[in-house]
Each structure stands twice: as structure tokens, then as C-alpha cells.
Amino acid sequence: MGGVILETVPRWVGRVRPFDVSTLEEASVRSSSRVRRLEHISQSAPLRFAAAVLVGWFLAAGLAVGLWSAVTGDPLVGDGSQTAGRVFATALLVLFLYRMGWLGQSSITRSGPRRVWLVVALAVVYLVPAYVWGLFGVPGLESLRVSWDAFLGELPVGISVGIAEEFLFRGILLFVLVRAWGRNRTGALRAVLVTSVVFGLMHATPALVGEDLGYVTANLLGTIISAVWWAALVLTYRTVWPGVVIHTLTNSATLAVAEIAQQSSLGAAGSLRADLLELPWLIFGLWLLIDERRFFRRETVPA
Image 1 (cartoon, rainbow, N blue to C red):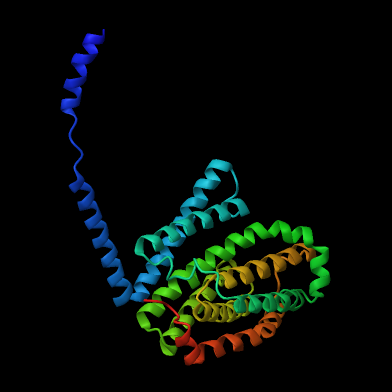
Image 2: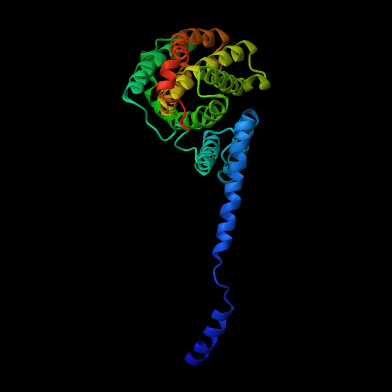
């Protein structure tokens, strides 16, 4: 038996082809070529590139939602399916940023200076009760104490929404447009306007299923206001995480109070009232953007 094995092994080894390093080198060259082409498109046609990224993200999220629902039985619109879709699509987005060499430049790996977290603390303390009072007409902090368990229940979904939307809109899309249109006040304002309007339109989709047009319009305005000053924080302090935290906590708090108040539709008046209460933060964001000296000093998007 041993002799048979000893005779067979040399013949088997002889048939094994030696590892060809040139195959890996060719694959690396092809991959680098694809990255260079994408890099060129992002500079020469940034809107088309941003639209492709946005569509790709939604397609990936939709695929993951369908698979999760099929495997677990969770409804397509259930929290579990939607969260799975956001997590999967955002993981692919981070992988794409890494492959393009943009991970550090996109501001998602930076925590930012301490002063921006003071801004976050002030914003949360002001906006959470302001949103609750504006939307529902009830005292904000008192309602949150009553709905603390509901808030904790909404928090996982709020985290997935905050990370996914901030990484997508203020991480890669804003980065790509500012990089192509110029690291200056004009380029930044254009990029902020485009990404904020698209962000608002994404939240106007309830109009397609018959939601009250007044509410949808007020909600559209509110999401644009939020997007503008969140983008200003990203460009000024080079980190998306303040926006993630504010986005997560305000969403979770208002959803929790909505659950307690048993209000599925907030109404146009409540949404507009919340928009007005957020205007001071819009003014703050615009002030950050138009002060060009501050903008250049912070080197908005490193080359």
C-alpha cells in the first residue's frame, strides 16, 4: 500500500501547474484600471456618478430586503427587513469607498474635534424637545420620560437609518460633488444644495401612496433644512458622525413619541412648526459655509 502511494504522489504532483504570479498581477492591473476609470467619471461627470451610486445603493438595499424577508418571513416593510437592507447596502458602500481609496477622505473614519461634539450636545438638547413639541404639540421632555421604553425600542432602527443615510448622502455623495466642483465656497454650496434637495425628495415618496400633500411638502422642507446644516458640519469639521448622532436621536425620539401619542400622520401644521423651530440651525450651517476663511482653514476635503 505504501509503495502504491509513493508511486502515485509524484505523478499527481507532476500534473499540478505551478502558481503563476502574473495572473495576480494582471488582475491587479485590471482592477486599478477600473478604479482609474471610475475616478475619471467622478471628476468629469460627478452628477452621473453620484446618481449611479445612489441607484446602486437602493438596488442593493432592495435585494437584501427581499432576501431577508424570504428567509425570515419578516414583511418587506418590517423593521427587520428594512434594517437588513440598509446594513447590507451601507457595508457595500464602505467597501466601495475603501476600494476607491476614499475611505479616509469621505470623513466616515474621523471623529472630529471636541468643539463639534459641543455643537452636537446643544443641538440634541434643543432639537429633540423642539421636534416633539412642534410635531405633536406636547411638551418634549415630559413626553420623552413617558416614552423612554418606546425610545429604546426605536433606537436600533434609528441607528441604522442615521448611519445609512449620513454615509450615503453626507459621506460619499457630498464628497464626490465637492471634490469635482471645487474645494471652495461656491463648489461647497452647490454640492450642499444638490445633496440636500435629493435627500429631501427621497423623504417625499409618501406622496406616491396618497399621503397628504401639505404634510409631504412640509416634511420635504424640513429634511432639506436638516440636510443643509448637517452637510455644513461635515464640510467644516470633516466628520459625518455628528450628523449620524443627531439624525439617530431626533428620529428615534419623534418616532417614540408618535407611538405613545398614537399618531401615524403628523399633519402639515405640526411638520411646518418643527421646520420653523429648526431655522436657527439652518442659519448656523449657512454661516459655517459662507465663511470662506474657515472653510479653507479646515481643508474641507483633502486631496
